Length: 145
Length: 467
Image (cartoon, rainbow over all chains, first blue to last red; front, top):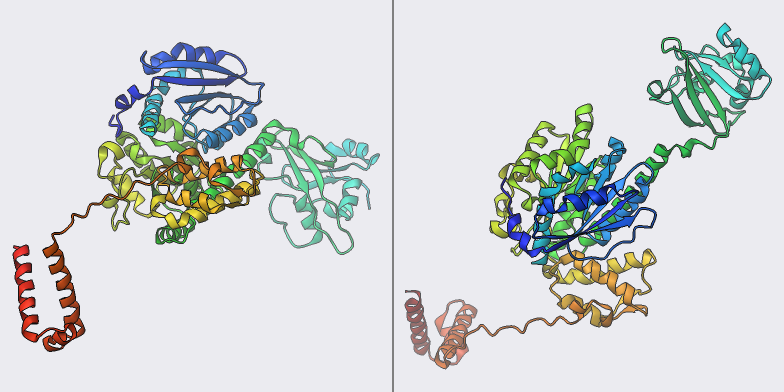
């Protein structure tokens, strides 16, 4: 695949990436901890944190590489939407992902209007985030440069 | 009036039960004909029940303009009821000269086998309509997304206000782009507000049409398919469906993904449209006459746009200039951003002080509109008086000093400088005299022969310099 900006050229500028996982349980937290180094190699340090679902998801001010993963279900769909919108204004350079298996096609279409890197339905699908993370690193690299 | 009517033995027992109460109930048979109207229902509508029995009650227009037909039609369940089997509706029956029915909440339910099913309609006080989680969520999502799009539309409008020729040109392009649903290319410097402009233009050119926002640099062809799946499914399901792809940073999107997108656009011609935003970095943004001029020259830093997509984006293009080239618009944009903050209750400041404005005009704004927006938000949070002072601006702006202009003009030797000045005077005098050498010599206070000599010297000097 031809990429205008070589991701490998941008990778060295990113040394760490922060993950904030918002989910009712711990499934995605452990999955990210398990698979994150497979996505980027060992050269990048991954800081994986939980954002408890029952809190009001404070907007995290961070200028470095930041991935927010929201587990969305029918019960928290609207709350998550609020947070995704708020973060897209406050942190335009963060990468937001949505993990969802229960929402309908029209609900997903509505969420797709927002800046969402990808939709995942189960933790095993994290592997498909590899090109997204590389593209994201290249983007952040361009911004830092 | 008010006597319950029934024309089917199947529902007589049911009708007798309702006679004892003023319940507002009616029954429609599988052919869409009213077969029962309770006394309460007849009273609500202000008509004898037996006038309604046997009339068609199907969603849509009434069979005739007759009052009974219009009332029968208003009792019909909404479209889609056949599929779902239940429905909720608020009915406002048509008023007559003597009776004005109040609107009522109605619930419908289908009873029985599909080929002989009855539809029962019940009007009353219900508190369940907005408690269905899916409906509640759909309403909440819609409200939030409407607000989000509205906010973008306002920002898109602010990003393009101004009086400079560059701003006027963008405003004209936006007017065209907002009036027609076609592929659209937005070329902007980084942080130029392209996303907000794109959402504003989508709202204006195709209101209500679903769109999907794609971050181009993150996509490979497979991920692109996955991201667009809900929209593509919708387009495949119905030939009347339309959709828009809002692609950010197209010039940093992989060539394979761009080609894949092009093939998808070709699969749904006229139905799937593309709004692409291209960031042009470190590049003189001119106003090109053809699309090739828009393809960034330096592919290492600015990426490429494949010709197939570029051809599509030729339809309408909006080319935004960096703020550094719209210096005279900065005070207008900053003022509009401040007004927006104030209107949303996030600012006590009402104006921007002269020193703060001067600093903003002086600053080069490498991140363009988004940086100016951030600066105003920061200043509004910091300001303690009615005016935004220089100290309220972010440090990077208030401490910026424009580099001293470099003295790049090499000083001329005295003789050359004098000769140059003399040549200018001679040329002006000849022009004023209309080429008459005697008149020019008089104006300069020299003899005609001296003037001719000087002119010959000049032409000889020019000839030497040109060779």
